[in-house]
Image 1 (tube, rainbow, N blue to C red):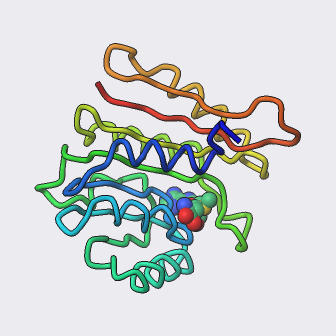
Image 2 (cartoon, helix red, strand yellow):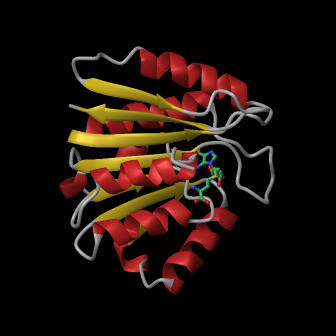
Amino acid sequence: MLLDRILDFSHSLIKKAVQDGDFVIDGTCGNGHDTAFMAELVGESGHVYAFDIQEEAIQNTENRLKEKKLHDRVTLIHGTHGPVHEHLRSEHKNQIQAAIYNLGYLPGSDKSVITTPDETITSVKNVLSSLKKGGLIVLVVYHGHSGGREEKDALLEYVSSLDHKSYHVLNYGFINQKRTPPFILAIEKH
Ligand SMILES: C[S@@+](CC[C@H](N)C(=O)[O-])C[C@H]1O[C@@H](n2cnc3c(N)ncnc32)[C@H](O)[C@@H]1O
């Protein structure tokens, strides 16, 4: 298939944005796939902040990072991503190059523990104020589960309202699939 699938596209955007030495955020680390991917990209001199409200997710991410010997370049935060800026080291404030969020629930776990519209938007706002010019936020929006539609609608409304003089906002998704396929929202600060 010529067109990138959703997760491939999210990674290709992050890969374009992130270089050795960058400081980045995984707002929903889950099983740690995106955290490990970004930890590879930032190299030894960069840093990743990874959040999750579930102990199981933090544990899974830590195990994945240890296996790959990437744990030294990651701060794992067992807590909500809303006040994300409060966890950044002072030298990393306003220096964030990229952030990724995979919304929804942890695959294979409790489907009632989900990201929520208010907390996700608060987090995105806080990351936007810490983001460098040329920085990028990628949101992978899963919305087929209970509560997903409300988050999708609130996010679309919020990102559509961002000032075009400061941000480019992209919506990438397949529009002829059955059910409710995930899609990507990406925000570039310019
Ligand atoms: C779709 S999963 C993330 C998958 C992950 N990117 C991976 O690579 O496996 C969504 C995660 O968001 C977490 N989550 C839900 N609300 C959150 C919040 N307010 N702050 C941080 N994490 C949250 C869930 O616990 C769940 O692990």
